[in-house]
Length: 338
Image (cartoon, one colour):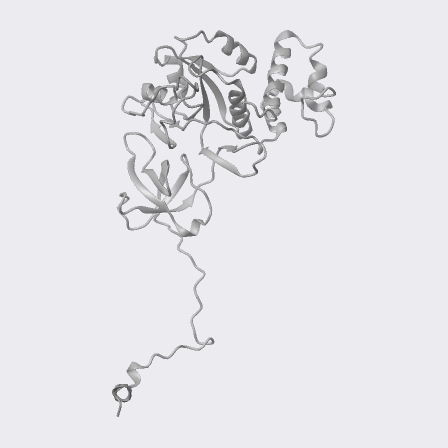
């Protein structure tokens, strides 16, 4: 008798695995855990699929920092800095033993951009921000009004209160730049010799504010002045190209001493507005929205037969300046040179 047959002769019924039939098999459950014991957290940083979170009420004194990954049930739902989430799991919320993000709360605001004006894919910069500070420099690098206009448009579209901070005023006066945006009623602050004005600290206290601007304009330097222990890396502007280095490579939210959050972002060189509707921008200007009632259908509000253009002839100087500034913002959506 062959060894193989002898081995088979020693098998009994306990060695036989019977596959159940289709009619007798138990179907896979479609019930999912409700995660009733999940804890609330805020996302303060994102790094290649791993999220830095703060567990607790969200204040600098009581928040506990930890790490999390996205749970499978979230699918393709994105998580960005500023998101309010629920986390669950037996992990210790350490970098080697993270917890799982199982829910994302509804966002109160979403600051978005596209790669260019023809790209339909929207990229979320930050969630739940209440204020946007557009940071620009008077020199080194030179101010680029195209990006400022586009950032203001994105903020108005998202329902976020915009502000302007002009840095490096010790290198060149900021008067001309401030005068350009004064008709829009956008609050503006001037920083010279890296000294943060007290008025800026007051408007940031208790709010969730995101900084936006080109590389080298001084966003990280501003954060270091607002948050003493931030230690954000700063760099010099290239003397040949006139551009700054990408010293900040990720979006990070930090607590302000007076309460609230400040979000530092990497330098932006393109800001597409393919997702923006002109009607939502006009709605942000209460005193001008009524003038558009007589505009033709699908009016871009920057045409010869637009009611805003017609109102320019008889409008007082202050109102004419606001109309001109609004139309400049609307033109920025179609201007690729910024």
